[in-house]
Image (cartoon, rainbow, N blue to C red; front, side):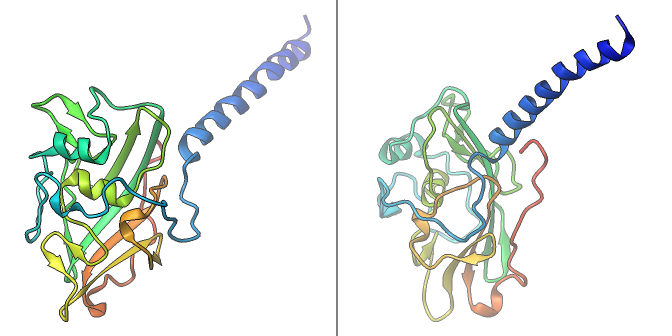
Length: 218
């Protein structure tokens, strides 16, 4: 067979294969990508007031990973306690938390009980602020659900033990857009940059983060 014919036959196979791999990768990475058009809200949540959830933290920061009461919180939230990470939906978002202008660590192992041997569909693996959504079913999740899994009170006006008063308010931003509605109902999308800030207007980070440098495989 002439070299040109062999090469042509190889290209006929290789090009469609490469396109297929690229499309699958693009779909996995961006199927729930941030719309970059501002906050999008879910219609309702199982829990509208997290104050009564087991193990909820209502003190000052820093807050721990919230392992205490985690299984009971998941049950109240209608979220499963998985034996391993789900694979039907896999996205990553980034969360920055600021209190009176100072960054607050989003700890590792939120949503993970290593002693109990289970993991929530919403969890963290390290203190980078990257939220991992690894669900056994394809469904929508909200920012409020993540804070409930974390075990930190999060409402329109309160963050942990901090509630709106003359000394500060709670403000939430998604990709640089301020969320005017109920922040608990903010839908999570892949590669979002979410900022939760409590304090005065002068204490907001300047500029408010609009994006995060996700690794290519995140």
